[in-house]
Length: 97
Image (tube, rainbow, N blue to C red):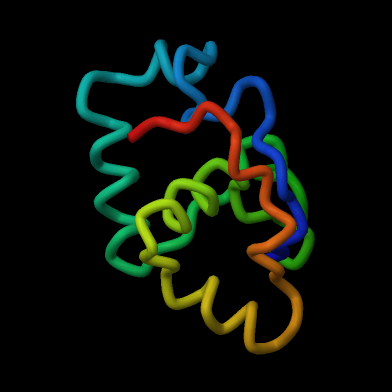
């Protein structure tokens, strides 16, 4: 999994009011947030069809977790390996709370 998306796409489920955000089943976003807060990763929906080693971690999820001051285990490992730089994230994105 790659960690080089720094800006959420316009359809990111973590963007308030995005097409994906408003069409998720009730409670689904809460499930996703709970999962990533418990050290699971969340693949960007635009990279799901790529080979596993080419898939990207969702930038919206990265920003959400960084705002919570709760980077998950994969984020911490990726940062230590030098493949993730939280300072490049577009932190002013309109991310859900």
